Image: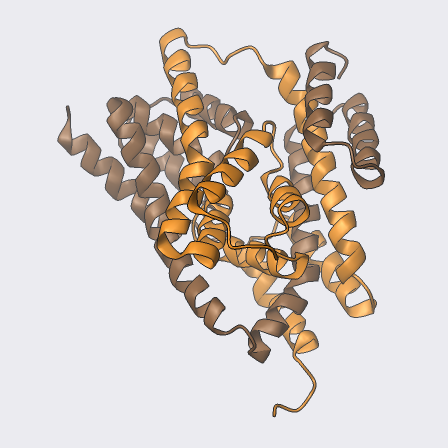
Length: 181
Length: 175
């Protein structure tokens, strides 16, 4: 990791993430910018932060902004990151809400969104390949990966049900084996 | 300005914030029940439309509450609903991340970082799957997803350029 980012850098970076995610794929964009481009955190820390932010109540991406903001700059950092993530999107959504409730129409961008969504799915898939290459080595992690995909993605079990089954197995597998000093 | 509505907005969304374990989408049914059936702030159709808009707009999809707040009580309602939806959960994340930072070298944190990685990658694949299903992709759209995935994995082209190009392809009506 390079230097501790400033409050402005935190706000600007999360604003960048928010605006890039037109059509979806916020998690993939977060990794693209926080891990690859800015190198503020490594994949291991990023992935565990993502899962913690999913388990805790609240919108995942806002939670991640709080988490990253606190890590570098405490409470002011969290506020800066959340502000950066939400300010412009809130203004956009307000404009859309005004337009929608005034004219009773969804702005005609359906085609553009279809294309952007196809690419956002692709960015999310490429994140699976890139992070999977590093952590899906060996039989146990591969099985954990497949099990959680089936349960949550195909069978649509709630997240908590999946994790209460699989997290203990994952922790038992990953617990450091060496004796403590 | 209607203070009672503002108070209702604040109480409703701050309680939904704490209940939304697993992400904002998990409380959508409850949000629908309260805002459409109980308070009558918007109709069934409007709820479905603002949901679609909030999914597509840039930024967190939880900003559906901004639109609901706007419909219920104008711009102050929109801002209050947004803050109410973020604050309680945000405080909890703050507390957890403090503990997390203090546990830097503990075996528990090492086990979580190593053990949760394969689970997170699986959950991300699940969300790609669900996004693709929700977008109701045609075979052309699947093809586009495939090509874009190859580009993202094999090249260093800025993803924004790829997403924008895909948007243009969709705009031309090829999907």
